[in-house]
Length: 149
Image (cartoon, rainbow, N blue to C red; front, side):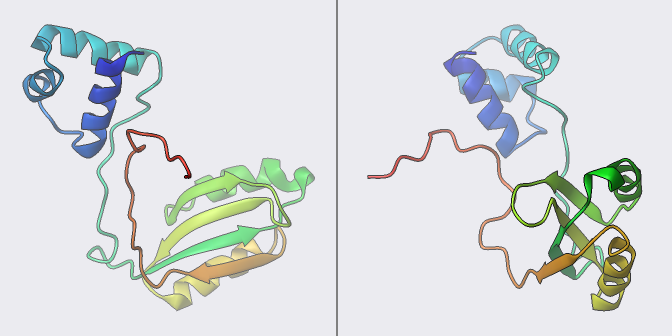
């Protein structure tokens, strides 16, 4: 991993549909070199997948929420397939603290969110936070590491 690879990764995060030619120009390498580097980054799993960032509100999903859930270790084998089958769950992370799972979800309204939480509660206690706004949306890894002064 060198500076050219990092620049390619940053460029792809900003625009995953950039052409090889454009990426090569941004990194001052030939198109075949840029293509080979990207293939290597994919092979080495630095690039996991390519994905579009959707406007959920425009698609009718007006409620975004984070749901914390307490799941007993013995229930995880049943919980994981269940949660993976719910398309409204955008992310599910196993976390530290009083709750073991943190779910990022979207729903058309609070009624659907309430029904979902009712289903979740068979696995344990929940705590839900509904998002009012998102001042910093999805973005890639920042090129330079944050350093406090």
